Image (cartoon, rainbow, N blue to C red; front, side, top):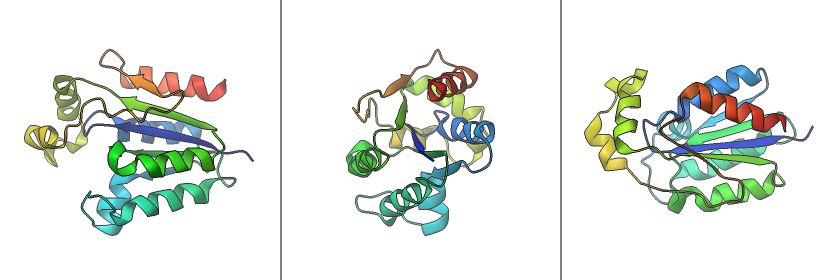
Amino acid sequence: MESKLIIIRGNAGSGKTTTANSLQNHLGHGTLLVSQDTVRREMLKVHDRDGNLSIDLIRQTAEYGKDKCEFVIVEGILYKNRYGEMLNNLIQFFNQKTYTYYFDLSFEETVIRHNSSSKKMEFGEDSLRAWWNQNDYLGVDGEVILTNDMSQNDVLKLILNQLQE
C-alpha cells in the first residue's frame, strides 16, 4: 500500500479540525488522523513552544501510518517556524505523496467560523488574536491555499477531488 499524507494547517478557528474530521469520516476505516491539539494538549499536556515534545510524537505517529494506512492526515496550527522542518521531513518520508492545505482566512472570517463551532466556549476572540499568524505558508510544491470564499463543503470536495487524481 502506498500511503498518502494530507497536511491541513491554518490559524485557530479556521476550520482545520472540522475539515480533518469530515475527511477522515469520508475516507473511512484505517485513515489515521494526527491532530496537533490531541497530541500536544491532551496526550502530552505541553505548551506550544519551540522544541516541545509534541513535534516528535506527531512525526512518529504519522510515520507509523505509512504503508499501514491509505491516508494519514496531520492537522493543526503547526506554525512553520516551529513545525516546518518536521513537516518537510514527513513530506520526504512519504515520498512526495503529499497533499498540503493552508487555511488563509481573514481574521474577521476566522472569528465568524470560530463562533459557529463547538469550540467557541473554549477560547474567544482575544485568544484568536494572540495566536494569529498571518500568511504562515509552508511554501512546499503544490500547497493549496484555502480562502474566505470557500465553505467547509467546498474545501472537503476540493481535497477529495485532488486525492482521486
